[in-house]
Length: 170
Image (cartoon, rainbow, N blue to C red):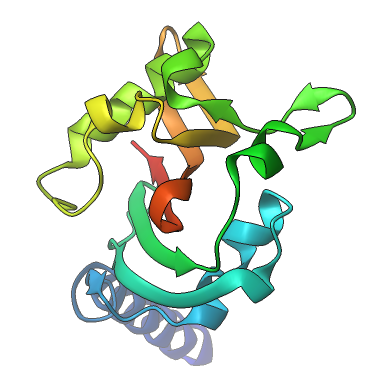
């Protein structure tokens, strides 16, 4: 009897958690991200969290059980010079690539951004991202065959000190 009661409570709690995760607690969060939530973006690319002035736009999608998601941020930062980006390396490897000079693998990953334009219409277009006006810093790119299915990429437009970040798993 005790074991049956315990099992019933466990099933009810599990169903409640699943329902909450799929419905109530798992909704997209649009423009609800604070500066503290996005500090990692500039820390990852060694520009320093102190440069963030404000979060202009944000989109944090609901999560699936497999971790599928789309997160994107548009940040206003203090001025950054193109020369600062071209000299930024890690162990001799470039950290930033100009948008019109992307290696093929990174170019393919950047092109996946077009898949999400319905959810994030404020994010720059692929043609803009692959222009000389942007610099690109890949944090993580995972491929399934020849198609990227996990990306974490940081984009910067030095002309107006804007940073765009995208993370997706599909």
